[in-house]
Image (cartoon, rainbow, N blue to C red; front, top):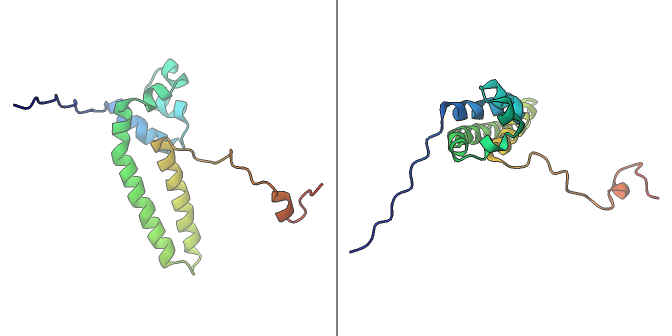
Length: 130
């Protein structure tokens, strides 16, 4: 007879964690401000990763990330259809904004400041070549 392993308990996010996910998008990724707006304490707002790295928060963000990814795909599809028109720029801005929100909620970097291009001064007109 095989021994059955206990099932992992389903993670159920709190209402506050669900509201924090939405607040992160609405506050443009300002973690402390987002948490404060949904009622977290000042102490928790100073160390927001305690909330943002919790299993409940990670579970709460899944449906929002899915919605954002779907919306991003709609913007991409629209940009492809209207590539020759001025509105394709609006669609691409929408893609950029939604991508940033996906990166923020998913814990990814929103910029690549560590990337460096050696020799860029030789490519940019008027760059310092000394």
